[in-house]
Length: 453
Image: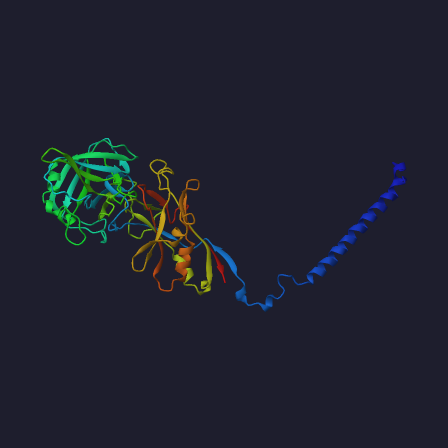
């Protein structure tokens, strides 16, 4: 141990430590000097700041706590004239109850009547069913009734309109067995007496836009369908065909003349010169199953769920009191909306309602002070509605809607025409959806990002 303390290595260790300590002190002094030099300089981004007015600066902010409320609503009087799709039959849902669909349409002569003698041999109705829902393997019957009031393409007709009839009808027309969830082209045999009734006054078998013609003589048909047990709903289009002369829904009178020459005469439902038509819908919510029945409709109650039904049934109304408060706050007079997104979570019961059964997309409309309803302007920003979105996110289980244009328009509206509320609806299709709302664990959310000038 003694020889260790007398070793010549020890002085060398002290010299090494002193040298390192000096280097550390020197670097520290250099760093301090640099700090004081920098702190005395004005940041380049701040030079001249005092010379610029405050209006030359903007602030971008986000809010995701604006209050939002959801309600389940129903209006039994919805305009349905000149529809793109007509529905017929009945469908049942344990949450929504029973829905009944019917339609009224004119029929139009396909060509000029030849005024030659004839005998009707048979009458057939050709229908192109775009979709079939429900039990198609049970007996379903069709009833055709003559309407007593002429209808017009430029008139408004509503889903609850009563249909005056003449008393003439063709009942108990049995439909063929149909295939569900696909297109069905069917041919239905009608009694010869119906053809004779249509042609009972051949002087009225002409078309004219200047005087009463066939449409005033035979004003149209009221289509209804009945089921022997389980209901079924079918869809067809009475809109003019996209291809000239390619009719899909029509009546044919098969006839022969006095020398037994066969001929045919057509009455068209989906005529190129459009026939007037409208849909009738009725909804019986009381037939829904116990425990699943919608409890609050049109009563202003903020439930944890809201509902949206096809065929003009119940829908979800969303009010934005937080946005209204923001508009009334002078501090937000000069803002530009960068982003406004509405997210609406979906409820699945794991059985009837799941990701594969809900509508693939939904739309939003707003209501003006006068009561008119329009799609939010964001929906038509691009051809495919990509900006608006509205599609179901099956991973997050929600619908997303971008509504920046609507929000900006509402904030800038000084007339009070635009109301701070929206309605969720399904543009087309036959699927219902249940949505989470209000005090749900995952409620509807409204996110707003804006630039303040």
